[in-house]
Image 1 (cartoon, one colour):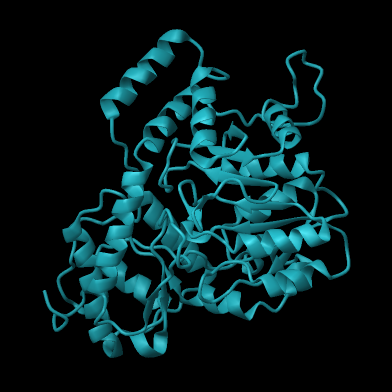
Image 2 (image 1 turned 180 degrees about the vertical axis):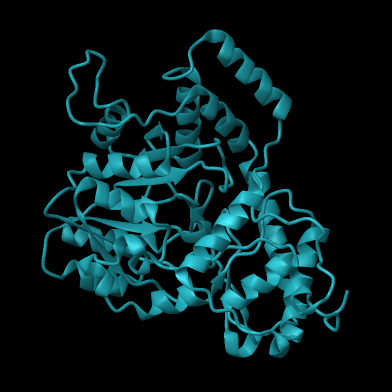
Length: 415
């Protein structure tokens, strides 16, 4: 295939006969996992058992942290962590708007106020200068939250130093980052706590689940108690917790996945380099990368699209890839402060030009740990030929309802 061939959106033959999904969970020793699950089912103990404890121990060992608490989801882990830190009504949590909505949802559920800050254009991570300005704004700050976006570690040294100066805890949304490291140090031990996701789109998967890691014994004890309703076992609940336990079955899947994380991360990094070479002919595409010296899980391979140089904007490019039977997502569009759920929130009126510019420009094509070289090359070829014929491709302008309908259609096809 060459760049002279017409892209499918202009009548060319689609590069894929069946839709190429954005993600696909990768598990290695499936027979071994099946035997473990069979043993769990035979035991009759489906929660609060040895498999969850083993997973927590393995995570502690890998990340070099004192405590790991398995929970039902990253969102629940964030909620319980904020509760343990005393974040609630009358306090603000400063966090980026350029992240997944659950980062803010967890704050709202505590009764605290979200206060959105900027991100940097290059890393898509928290802008420390803007963060400092938000900490100086009126109102008590209960916590800072920063996201390791796409698995690329945030600027933790500057964030933690700023937080220490102000006496404010940092809760890292590490949903993408189980396996990442910052300057040789594993993500997991920074801030007051870090909270990971083990959902199916991640590199380490449990099916559904999350993990809170910390070196604070009191915080860990409160999260551990909180995941079981706040009930220490005598049904005299100490506080209003959640049903946020991870099942033994999910822990078994996570253990199998964790065993292969290094190989999967290495494969993903290799795929990113191959892809970068493959799109070298297409001007106006930038791969968002971790800082030099950092190791990323590469949970996502995300492009920043320059519509002037590339020829079409990110929305139109997504439409053109769909015609090629290639799935993609716009992580994160719209940013949280532009979403319907936060439209009437006071912080939604903040001027966040870098966030808005990134949100308009990002697009995430497929990447998973056992994605084949040939399929990856075809994705790159699709981008090259779309770029070559960009002047003939009409722009796409989707209204909010149309976006919702498009997403619903994609999800139905995934099901």
